Image (tube, rainbow, N blue to C red; front, side, top):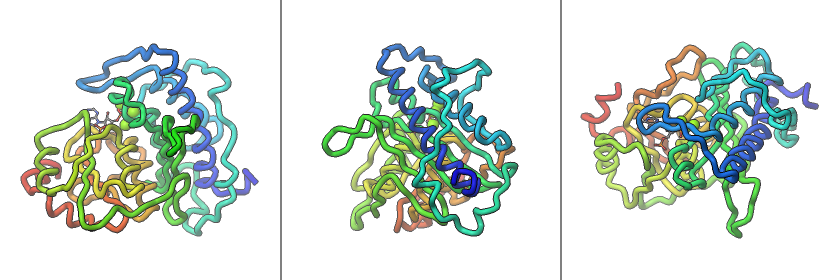
Amino acid sequence: MAHSAPLIIRLVASSVRTARRAGDIIRNVMAQGDLRIVEKGKNDYQTEADRSAQQCIIKSLERQFPSITIIGEEEQSSCDVPHEWIVTESEPDILSLDCPEELQNIRDEEVVVWVDPLDGTSEFTQGLVDHVTVLIGIAVGDRSVAGIIHQPYYKNEKGANSQGRTLWGIRGIGVGGFEAQVPPSGQRIIVTTRSHRTPEVHDAVEALQPAKVMYVGGAGHKVILLLEGKAHAYVFPSTGCKRWDTCAPEAVLAAAGGKLTDVNGHEYSYCKDTPYMNSSGVLATGAGQDHEWYIRKIPGAVRDKFV
Ligand SMILES: Nc1ncnc2c1ncn2[C@@H]1O[C@H](COP(=O)(O)O)[C@@H](OP(=O)(O)O)[C@H]1O
Ligand SMILES: [Mg+2]
Ligand SMILES: [Mg+2]
Ligand SMILES: [Mg+2]
């Protein structure tokens, strides 16, 4: 079965298992209590969990898919990793999905995988672990087509779920691992950055006249709030997010009927030679939202800084 499924399906099926293993590694580092924080830049941190989770994901995917391009947020080390970090399994329910015609004959050379081993590092270092996600985004050519968002600290309503949860989406196929919800009509809830606020972010959020603003960490976490219908739009008119922050969330959101672009409505390219920085900001809207309306409402003086 594993060898008969198309490449995209096999990639998603093994990325789901790999993201889960990365989540185990993140929880283990936190449980051991020494994050070994490195400051990469202003308000930009890396921990032992970011480094180890990335080793797990990249070494596992390289082993199974040696000819694809994989780009990760953190610097990659050539050191050996514990053998239990190398994932060789795939999620059987995904391997058995029907694949639409246009995704059936993708070649390895066309695929770029964007890896954010730990999204929401600032919040992680502050103990706000429910903001943390592991992001594996799969692009074909320019376009983000599939994504995995794993939440290592997700708890169900009863407060129990030690494995976290794994949300996935593939354009043209659908989503899994969660229950997609359309945000409520008659009010507007905006979600934005907690730790990278700027005057432009403030001005754009204000202009949208929200009933409520949620300041939370992580691009993955913010898009989950859209997917679950807890917020209507994710608004971030600022540089700072990178392709690995948005590739997976964009695909899952699109597969659920939402949309992620820059703040002027242009789609980012995810091809292997693209700059890493999402220098024109991020605007994401949940299913059923009028994406163009949000673009028009963000003041021109703000949007003009990100053309
Ligand atoms: N000004 C900035 N400098 C560095 N990284 C930034 C940034 N603004 C956003 N980011 C990155 O974008 C992601 C989402 O940011 P935020 O939580 O503020 O919305 C985070 O990813 P990581 O946690 O993977 O580094 C964060 O580091
Ligand atoms: Mg980071
Ligand atoms: Mg990130
Ligand atoms: Mg990260």
